[in-house]
Length: 176
Image (cartoon, rainbow, N blue to C red; front, side):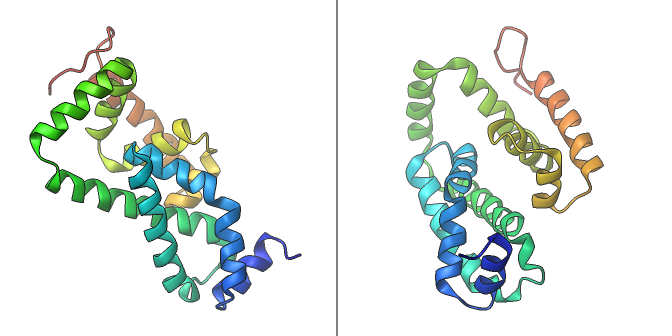
């Protein structure tokens, strides 16, 4: 059986079985990331499917096959952001209110956090989601986002600071 790097090299040469093995090996983590962004199982699965399609099409162009996992994770994050933008354009206001009311019954605190996260810049939101929803290391996040580790640390610090300003001590959002 091939190791991770050998699978990546084979996948990038067009080996469908190797590509499938790699995606299968990382599917739970990729799904978890998608769900962290979209908060909906069917949307997360749809975005995961889109990610796999895009990755397969572009895999042969990947210069460093050993960086396969950070690379496909970047594609996934872009797909999630695209889906979030698409949803904002499509969802009627009444449906949003119904979803918010249903979600409030589940957990006010979680909803407040998710609202606050959605209101900060993507560069901060990405590091916070990967760190705290996916429990990734600074090194892994740096690799996925293709930025230095120091940048990830700064964005984490700044992102947490922004979140604190968006959420009152009692848990209610400031309307900024």
